Length: 91
Image 1 (cartoon, rainbow, N blue to C red):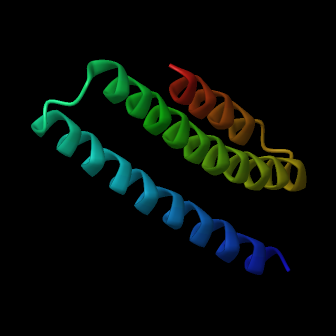
Image 2: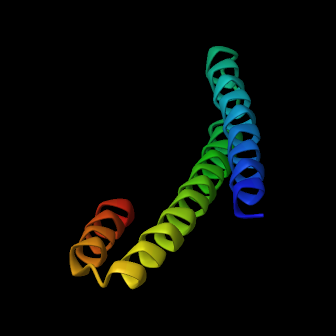
């Protein structure tokens, strides 16, 4: 079941990234067409929110796998690595 969930998650993330790609191309068009700055900023905020969601989804999955491995092997280094990844992600 876990592999299926990972495959579903991967597909969901890929679909989200393709949608984000479309949003970014839309932003480029908006700039080229000299659209209103406030409209562009709304779209920038939407792209930012969407990419943050993708990052959270990936981090959640990574955390689950890392914690699972750390608990199995009592590996404190895995927990330290997870904390380091979290620090890099939230900057």
